Image (cartoon, rainbow, N blue to C red; front, side):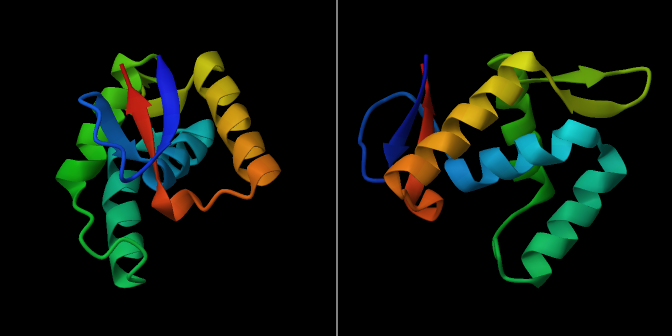
Amino acid sequence: MISLKDHNDDSKSLTLKAELVLLLLRYTIKGLTVSDINKLVRNLTSSNYFSSLSRKTIKEYLYYLIEYDLICYDGTKHVFVINKSGISFLYIIAASIKKYSLDVKHMSIGFE
């Protein structure tokens, strides 16, 4: 199960920053390569958008997105690509944020 929650939720489930999850899902729509990851980290950290973001963090997030069947990795093309469930999830979260005027910067996504 995947749920959107407040950062202050103390549950034991895996929680990831919603803002970064949504960003990665958007990037994987066209395909995210390893070299794209390096550029993404440089761009986001230089703009202070995610000041402490590392390549390791991005890889961990991508791993969990694969584990929860939101994206897949195409080994022949060396690219991460969103799949149907990831597109559905992205749409549901974006619609919820808009409908309820949620601030994604203060939200986490819980995976169980």
